[in-house]
Image (tube, rainbow, N blue to C red; front, side, top):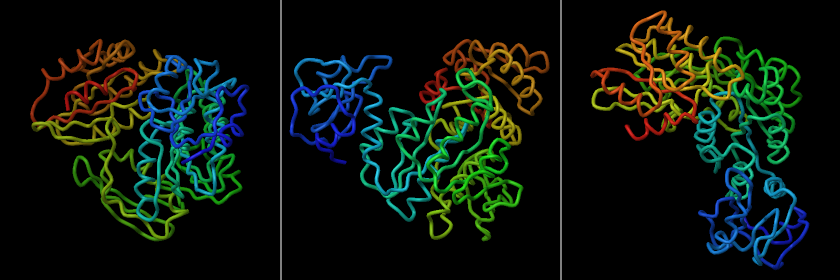
Length: 435
């Protein structure tokens, strides 16, 4: 995308322009290390103040910077809020493309990957990369898009009001909420608050897919005035799961009712919990595709369900993130597999009552047919203490590094290991290094 200085000024309305052009911008970034020629740098205030890197960005090719205070004599647009300016500029570039918003308490990224896979079978499609699902990542993606008629936007929130702003920036034309759980309760409060915040994604949507198995979405489905379709494991719906069976540890065969037509295929994810993400993606894309898409060629992302065999040991990597509801679903799937099963579980973060929730989680998890539990971190110490009252073969490690040492002493050929933990615990780093 190319924008003139005039277009930038009209969108962000700077208080002051230092060394005006004319000039044109073809790249937009908040990271000076990745700056390119003809770029526009946004000095954002985060863990590190972006104003400290304005001069570095200019040296690396930036034509100008958006700042909240002037830095030197380089071309700059001084605004009250650089983050808001980033969003305003991105929003000003929206056109007639379809913007598919995906939110929920779990499964957003997996659903995004599936939507991208399905839409790409018929259309040039782009999606927010990695974890660019917030007030920085989404507008940066929009500004650097390549002109696809279909944009997939993963939209994550952790604070009240964030979804309002994301919708104001991206204006999704279609939307899906994967599933609502009590996640980010530390900042969002009750599950009712979470439901209200997530539901705001529907404000600009003309089409929406709804999870009819999620009680928190019933009101949204009932009140939505646009074109709507529902998906379900058991209820009559536009897309319904008819059956599934395991082909291997990393592959499921599924049969679905897809808008009144039966389809069947192999789905390359290990747990039936991922079938909800499959149904969400199929339902959302059904508004745009001319025929049911192929399920072939789908691969889970690192940390989100990828399965490897390492010297006779099966490793299931779900180490990117966790919450009590999602973790229990994964453990339930693990318990159904044949072989000796080991669960390595690190702290679950951003919970309103973390101590109580970890204890409750342990009481429920310890009832499942899993041979060894290895709990990791200070919160999981509480889970460890709870679980060892009920069963043997329960271990605890203070850190992921210590956990890997304990685990390697426990391993046997044929073991199946599930790794699951919140991203902030760093468990994913140890899994990545090991595997």
